[in-house]
Image (cartoon, rainbow, N blue to C red):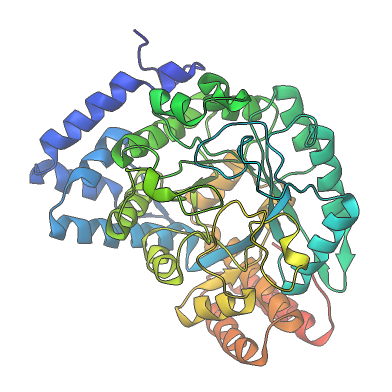
Length: 482
């Protein structure tokens, strides 16, 4: 029997089935242990230190106790602390991005995804470089600066050379005042050599969802194709790190397996990255299975209600305080709005999950990976965020200044966000307001910018940010960053 070891490079040891079962048993036995629960809540709470805050986070076992606890007063405390942590380390900024689907050709047999190889009636598409240019221009015309590219696993149709060429194309396009400044990549598990090539191509974060950490379920859900190899898939982040990519993004597809098991496995993966490489996940995503072509989510009997989903998000924030947390347009406006209060720091806007969808006037459905619940325009999402007191940020400065991996985490942990990311967010928001916003959004936006500038603690930084924003408005200058 494999022994649990977070430093191990073997999947069965750092995501250890017996350890998860023992964790769930411990959580169930202690879910009403108020003395322990109060101790854990106090441990999770951010504490002032110098100009910033420190936060110790929680282990997978500690966080599982809080998730298991169903005492309403405790749940409210969890939500409150999650919001405190989010504000302490990320402020009221919400980073904006959009997915870009390059190809839905796939040789895997994943039973929950419409791209599975046996689906013969979905429209298969692969963008040419010219079509990618058109998609990127359409995204730039909305105001996007950050993309996450997606492609099915198909060595013939979507080889690494195609992905690398597509990244080069995306970065090469300057349209009016638009430019994509960060390309994150969500493609299948690959080799150290290929991860090194992605790093050299200038990617931001490498994202790969585990889907489920329960090995037996994983093998059943991925019956055919290279993704069937659980160990190779689970160890992908280690190879990415070895290839020089220090910003990686984790996630599970909630609804495939029992959520408490997935929650513990997800946190164990984060702990493994910290133990083995000295830096945890840059992002954690929380997708839930949704309806799609050839996929009925009701077939999967582990779906979770909204209130449980919110508690999962809040407990992840308590456990991994410094990670970025992402919620997609799979979720409704209502759910996304509530989740922003409990730890989410990144959302997509005006997403289309079909290949070539951004150049179509009407939202196409024939090649979608999943149904999009939040179908608002980017302008509507930006305005909605500001009305709720959040700063929509199009910033990509940390990645472009080399503040990735442990360097970003150090910035976050020492409380320098308000002197760096906060003014960067305001400057990129000002770019959006000048170049793309409706008059109503522009009016709300500049009022927010004026108020938020007052929160920049260093006078010198604040003055530079004010001057830069004036240059954005009056001189048509762009791309200022700290």
